[in-house]
Length: 144
Image (tube, rainbow, N blue to C red; front, side):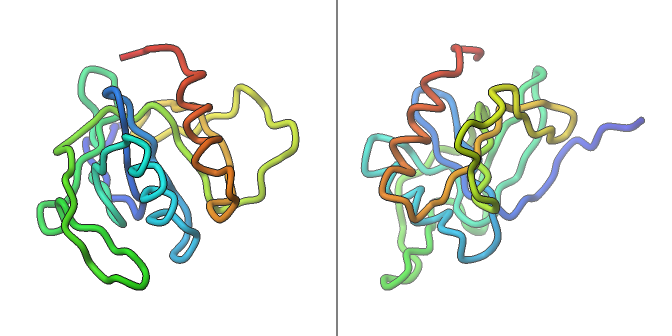
């Protein structure tokens, strides 16, 4: 089986400490809003709305498409320019497309380009969504 080398995905990516969260969900699920709340707490934008994913040294790397690098859609404000990182290893897949289970499987994962990532489900509009995303990232051992 041939492994794809890159993939363009409808998602938003933010990170801190060299580890990124890939926020995935349908349009209107709150990806950009959750990213903005995380950025208010020392996370950096990698890319908003679309993310180029690739594999390097057995790690999934997220990067912005050049046409939207450093740009973010903020409802009510439009497209704004923000500081961003050119790329970052993805450590956690955050699924905003389904209702979280009360007691999720701790071994839940998402496989992208042959790389398995820990996966959590969140409701982006929940007041605690950013705190839960940070807790989940902190629980992952320093793999990178």
